[in-house]
Image 1 (cartoon, rainbow, N blue to C red):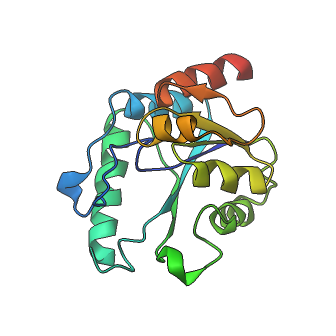
Image 2: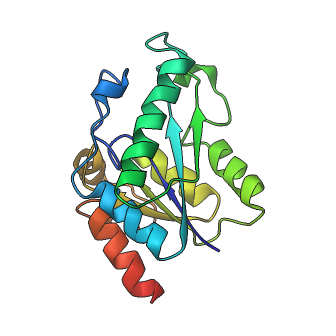
Length: 180
């Protein structure tokens, strides 16, 4: 099974320092939906792992998060793709939960759900916490320059051998080339 893990904000859609708090604020990054569609056509199973501390902060309710994800699923489907599941951490950073990236809890949930180790599974993110969570379970961290990616790259300290791509489309081009 070909599996890929994507962060949401900054990878699939534009992020916001004020959080994505409504379906109207969710806007796809150009080319991201088509990249997911290409993965789907090539038999990849696409899942999302995302920190959503806006829930704990009271910035939006669970129904709103569900509506945001429904919009994302619909947009991906209209482009010909499929996101199989969204794994999210609803906690604020100060709670020290195990599911908030950079901890590996969301990735462990994915491994359990799919009944497989995540060794060498590509995990695309725009922040160091995305990359560290992937590396913690032996997945293959990939950085995109969209979202917080440029800032993450400039800060350095990426996990060893982390490839860097302009956006999700370029990362998917690379993955499909090496998988062929």
